[in-house]
Image (tube, rainbow, N blue to C red; front, side, top):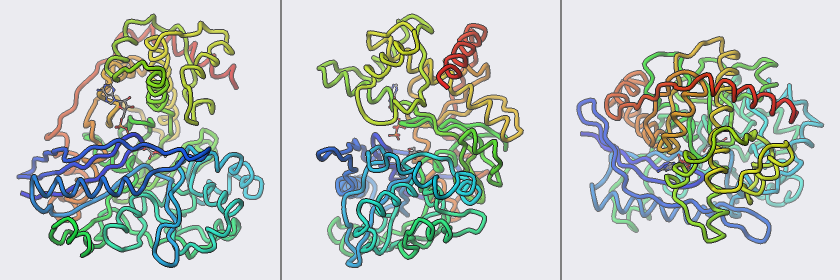
Length: 491
Ligand code: ADP
Ligand code: LRH
């Protein structure tokens, strides 16, 4: 039997899963779970990366106590954010959270000097204001001394791996999310770096998923009483790992990775870089084994997470299942929002923002947590229908149904409403998609699975999928009409 540990750091929580592969059956056991709490210092929002590193060590300890030394370790996390390493090898400052204000207005400034079409033709990556390229441009503008003294920038999984192994290495899937990596040239885009006055020397060498990436450093082995353990690069962008774990039977499938964000799209062999893809703000993120993820970011369950936090501040504590139950009790299709309105990107009082949006668009203003949750979930399901249609158009494919993976599939009402909205079945599972995809790449790298096709079959057999058949399509179809009218009136 083979074992491996996957660390999967999501924007709302992190976990360590011990994976076992035994005669073609994979099983997982959660050995550690922790919240990932952004930290506000005056008006700046940071990730607490040292705490995340501490939690990774706790995970290693817990794994050792329960199961001894694992065969290998892989780390994946949310994309775009990074730490800067100084000449002395130290982390220069706590990384900013991608929802921090330091990039406000920066993307617009960059696009004045380099046209969007040019950046897209080099990178194939969507325009999100918090992409690494704009974070680095913000550093160049506001803290040039930091950039000048840095020797490397390391994306979050690379940073954690550096702390654990001492190796400063990058990884392809996450490198592409910077919008500075050129997948056609298979290197950091030197022209973009130069035009933005970014030192190309800070970009790390880029490994592909499934390469050996160092060993647990002696000081940590001693500290935790562990043996020597190899690290592998996995698909270190969590969405990339989640897509590896999609238990699809057919080659051309549609997926929705459903967590803090909703990432919807299809796997392609070549980036889709034409104008229509750029105009619809689709992306082509690098994946494992020569694949790309043609997908779109949808704001996702972040809006519900943040609403829950607002209610909690008022002393109203609800679990996600409680909120979902209350949503089911509330009236249908009373108020809709565009989940991707810029209003919902920064942290803050989402219920109040939803109420403002409703008033501004002359819709009934939802009052109760149930009404607000219903508005969020229905609007997400309708947005999924729109983006699925765009994915079909851009890829020239027609999908029989939709695979959903990620923590959000525990919300079975959302799975059912998604099936209703798209008028096709939803195949849900696994919920721990990113961690399972992370483990799969380690097992492939170690020669214990033959490749991604076998990995997906093993995942399907080992974890199964739950099927949600579409229902009440005509009611949802009518609501979709109203949703489209709302979005076009909002411009
Ligand atoms: P991330 O990896 O981005 O941190 P996850 O994949 O863990 O996110 O998904 C977290 C989301 O899943 C939460 O925001 C919540 O909406 C949803 N969720 C988690 N558990 C449940 C549950 N028991 N019932 C309903 N929804 C849930
Ligand atoms: C999901 C995710 C997504 C990125 C965002 C920053 O966790 O990695 O793919 O766009 O976080």
